[in-house]
Length: 215
Image (cartoon, rainbow, N blue to C red; front, side, top):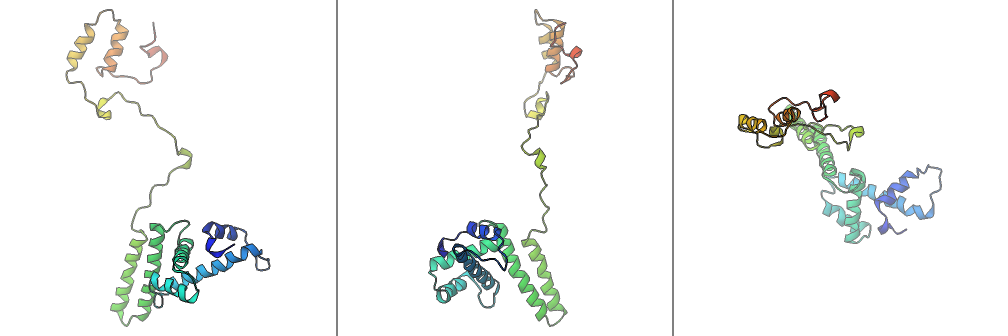
């Protein structure tokens, strides 16, 4: 297996094998182990701000010290961040952790270098910014019940207001219209009154109360 062809999926599969210290790693898996060591080295450089302050510095070091092409150096840099800070791509969540991690190291260094109380307080106040970056100031989203996922709920209503529809303006005119209908039984008129919201409507009537049932 060529190192440049190793993917994160290959690395995860290698880790899942759980090789012990006394296990013999197969020859075709050994390039992954060496690649993991390189990714860990890149992560260490990423955290050493005083020596490797940016992506460009790390990429340039990989080119000169490891003999990599610029393309592979950038690829391995991104892969290291993906592996150590996120499960797949470099998402916003991963970048938040990266930035917060750098800030935490800087804060600790500032606290250690504080000459007086003023310096100490100024450094510790930066923890508020770290908390904001990690979004600790935001309310956690509601946890959905997996058992209820995908279920649909039906809401029954005869009130047109709830549906954003126009309501009857002149109910007396509607009642007069229903009363003047010919060849309509009293039960049918009662149903018309209810569906026109002129009388209370029972959505789920008992069998003997259902006006749609014949006498």
